[in-house]
Length: 209
Image (tube, rainbow, N blue to C red; front, side, top):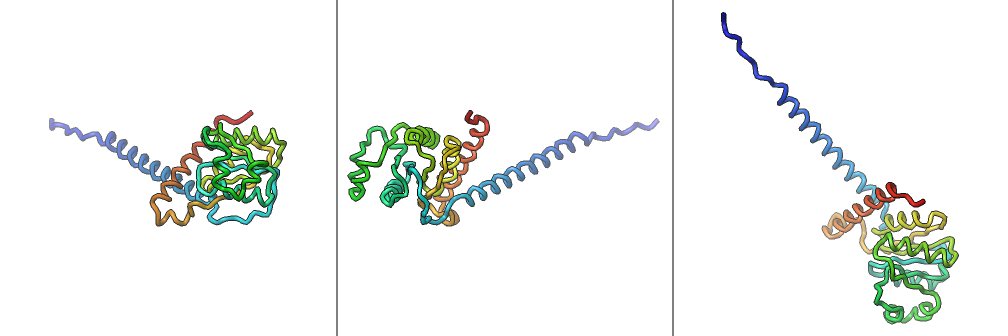
């Protein structure tokens, strides 16, 4: 009786091949989703200075970038708001030290500027701005921060102040179009995108009551 040759079982290798292909497809779609959401985030960032015609009860500037405070003081001097909160000031920094750097605004510093020394990040900025706005009885605020920071700042402030009308005033420190020529700008925007996505996830998982 002739011996029956056994054939190798090819099913197991085929399973691994199919799993590898599915994994590769999943990774590809994940990267495409990241790229698409990053481009959407980039679209949210203002790329040009704005001419503000609107007025609000108050103005809040989030420290951390050049020109933010001077732009906020210029808005206050032009009577776009009644008071200004500078949020995120170093605990050891005195009001006189900031005023000394911008002597042209000394008078409004003495009467109409408040400093927040508690905030350490954007979440803290939003929390302290809520406290300040409630103390002042403000129903509208102009928000001054760097243009790339506007999406996250507005999201955090909107969460803390759902009944307050917020007007964004972006200070253009990094133009979105520069990311194609500048590796530093591209990295800055991508890391800000990651912070924004983490903030959005946190706010959905831990909504304010």
